[in-house]
Amino acid sequence: MSVRIVGAGLAGCEAAYFLGSRGVDVELFEMKPLRFTPAHSSADFCELVCSNSLKSDDVYGNACGLLKEELRRLGSLTMRAAEASRVPAGGALAVDREKFSAYVTENIRACEHITVVCGEVCALPQAGIVATGPLTSDALMQDIEAKFGSQHFFDASAPIVSAESIDFEHVFTADRYGNGTGDYLNCPLTKEEYEIFVRELLGAERAKLHTFEKNEIFEGCMPVEVMAARGKDTLRFGTFKPVGLSCGDGKHPYAVLQLRKENAEGTMYGLVGCQTNLKFGEQKRVFSLIPALRNAEFLRYGVMHRNSYLNAPEVLNADFSAKSQHGLYFAGQITGVEGYVESAMSGLLAAIHVWNERNGRGVYIPEDTSVCGALSRYIAAPNKHFEPMNANYGILRPLDVRDKKEKRRQMAERALGEIEKFKTYSEI
Image: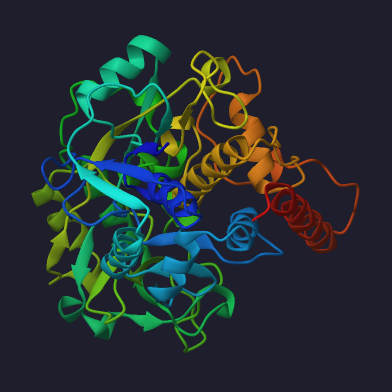
């Protein structure tokens, strides 16, 4: 009997590839290219719409870096695709979006046990994995809400500019604290330039969102104009912080906007941390006040969109299965995990749980000593104020070690040991 998977994003493709590569017949439903969400434009699978960064790759010093290593050991397709499409980004794992999506799409279509069905699914299946993401189509979202309810928040993406349009006379190449190989372009601002930028940013006209509420902005994707409204120096201690950066002449800039490669060829650069809901014309006007971007050609403007997610503690188990409908699983950001890597994790784990059930094994939820286990348990734990969660040390089981560096090293070793136990149990 085949497994039906709805949605060919990070979670859906992880689930489909894990099962299909193990000889399980999979029907993968994807509505693109017949229909696109407001944030998608490519016909390929796993289109990254917000950023091209998968965050830190530090296994022993960052929770998301540790999660990546856990996924590598579980055979993650996302991690393979990221490595194949990697672009320089200091200590972070960033990818060429098009090459990343193409790699996943090629591997999915090449798997003989995966049948891709192009079309919109308007009602929940009786069984399978629903991985339609936070931008689930209206018809299917209505069915989900009727049976399981939902909540939502807004997040945003940042603009991308043409490399050849950057004024390199006002740029220096460096990575914060020297952590990298000169992977970021840094656009310095003087005190006067910074204050003018903030003033114009706060006064710029924003795109209208009719259902928008201030308390529905996700902190991890805070629009730069909303962040700036918290105080004139908020950006200078956050997105535009100059700490750890030197112009090379011994001087330190007052504020810095960083640009990161969007593709391997280096023809496109994204404005790091500049997610925005400004109108397109206003984005060009305001960001062009930065000396390095005064003649910038904007290849993509930032946009804001609504993300929906389940009140997971009420409706999901820690194996991502629905409490009220046996055989139905959810995966991806719709479950309340937040971030690219976290979404891929939920799809992979949901597939492993399906695999275990098909092979007569009971449910094994990894312990919260691992990031996989901690996130799985977080979404199912009773929580009256449930909100989306990304990988962080706060959800991991505490470890009584005083030295921070040593503590995180031991937490990583403990996590990877738990993942090996999970692999052995699942026979993968």
